[in-house]
Image (cartoon, rainbow, N blue to C red; front, side):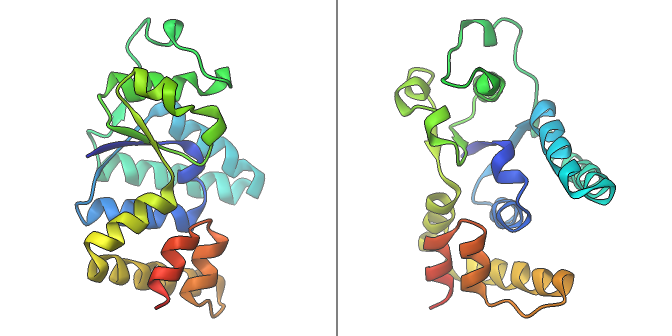
Length: 180
């Protein structure tokens, strides 16, 4: 399954680590465009120069780990597309160009299901997607959750539990599943 990851699911660290960890487990092939990665880097500027530098380093690592994941919209595709937020047309155009099966996003209102269906695409939320992977591969997803939790604790110097960490990351169904 080929899934285009919208900026809003790449920028929060925990959500990104869970999604990319699931991709490393073989649950899906991640896809993005250069513009999506650039949006992530611009959003990280809100954290200051360190945040921007970290995002640039992480996007370089993504490109190295998945060299075939990046696409550019084919010329002319964007001109024929419409979405409620015209700033998101590039995401849909990239998904069409790379023949993705779905777009993973939190922006439901900006990606109407009927509009995506006309292009042969689905819209998936990260929580429903990751929960589905847990249903298929609970051991793999539990190990992934443990790694993400350990890294969050290492970076924060705190003591997170998996459920509040994932709930804060807007992954409540997965949080409940992994907290069992």
